[in-house]
Length: 261
Image (cartoon, rainbow, N blue to C red; front, side, top):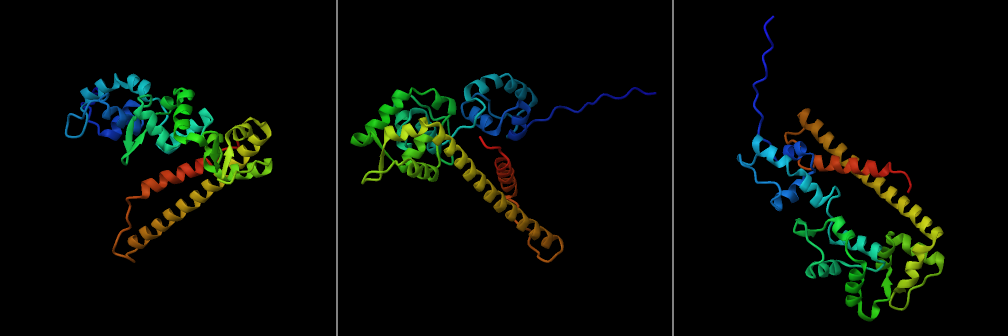
């Protein structure tokens, strides 16, 4: 029998999506690495040659060390994370002040808005965060409004309002609460457990609403596809948002299936 011929197919150049898959990186890790020059620019008309792909693979450990495996977040979520960590109501302006002080780095941008790495935020000195917030708040440094209290506790605002009412915590004439009493809510195991349960219920309800909304969007698109296939209409449906809606539906279903904390 004749010997089986060996494959002579040459390795092909990769686009950005295939390069990320080849390197085992997420799209955001690759994007940041390219922006920082850790991954070199494509050398073949927007694609990476096999030789350059091998060179990129050698840099993957450095990319993972630099950015971690958790996607960066914007200023609002960064402020929420710092609020819970430092026990004070951090706002977007405080995050920007930390950047101007040189203790926090903007790692990238999404739609023109700065992004921050979670491990950079988690490594910030709490005392520095408190100092920045206290300077902004001035004489109001020892009080928080309802939204600030919710950020400090890491609870949804509606959950804080409910727990505060049940625990007898009332606001002053400016609608502000004593910061020390807000912190005390987090130290109460029973109240914290109530908050966790109610926050999970609220998140579950939102996930189910999102799931239903995305399902209806896709069903409507499929109906318009069928109408086009059956020549009921001569205009095909727009497919530009389908992939995004499918991803959003997958996320909503995963969140709806998450067990209680």
